[in-house]
Length: 244
Image (cartoon, rainbow, N blue to C red; front, side):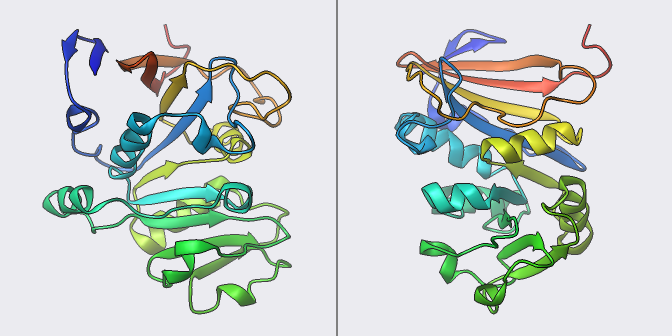
């Protein structure tokens, strides 16, 4: 694996994204797409990246106090919560809890837990859904917050996670409509992007599918770039002002 920017060097996966989490409130997102900007291959994002991408995903997740997913991602792909043991041990040494909080955002159809999510409890799983969505299945498994809007407001999600759960570093893992909502809310400060050397075409969802941003494009500044087997791993910060 090579680092291409800001310096050129050989490195290992363990060297990447190894710095401590930023101080204070921080919202960042992790995205994987094909070269033509598609966020799914055969219906799932898991088919896009390599094992290196999956390993870096765990390292990025390890920086977070809470990890946010949309109910659509849960329904179509499933969600494997948490980080592996070695990253959990790194977190403890940094003063974090071993596992990040898992957070789900759902619409009026509610949230149906699958797989390992059913093993979590209210201290490990937080769900935001509209007040008229069914949440009976979540009893005993999750802390549930309701909203009177059709979809949870990202600002409210961030505010409640920080105020009630002490989560100041919040990672958004998708899908595209959730990415879009957090961008439009002006909450995102960093973007981690894996660019896979694949092209699929068709009408698969794009990276930020949804309404256009209300004012102007979000301007990004490159912080780092790595490469492995033609797959690129880019880290951007959101520029202040006009990005010049």
